[in-house]
Image (tube, rainbow, N blue to C red; front, side, top):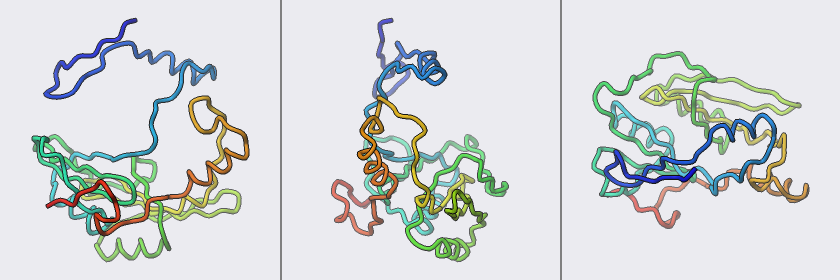
Length: 218
């Protein structure tokens, strides 16, 4: 099938409308047949959240989680804030009134969709910070092979679930090899890669000088 690219329905950019075949991905998952290589991606760049209250969400991500505002493209014609820290961006968008349902008072469910941050110190310090800001949380532990992982779950002002944990304590053990990525290598290289992969390599920053390419919002 010949693929098509158009700009239908877009004010800027392109929309791909052609030859993606979901059944091929399903076949690979079921049979292990290698249909094609994975996408050429390297890491998570940012997450994006639509907010009923942009100011409250921004204040939470800055004061509680330590994100800093960075410059946002001036060509964007809708309200929003870009934040950055720990090697990841958080893009907060002002939603249209009534388009976003808040779940501020909902039960904290660790199985709900969430964003997880690796704890850089003692988990008790995170707990104390949440209590300082009056943020309700759920703390629990997971044990695997004698390794104990501490987890703290809580909501941002929009009701989106966030976790802070020391999941880095758990080794990353692949269940299969793949021709699509770095696990397709000799075992010694795999172990070296997994050690590097499992460790957070982005320390927090407090100044744009520490992160070339990022401009502080003015």
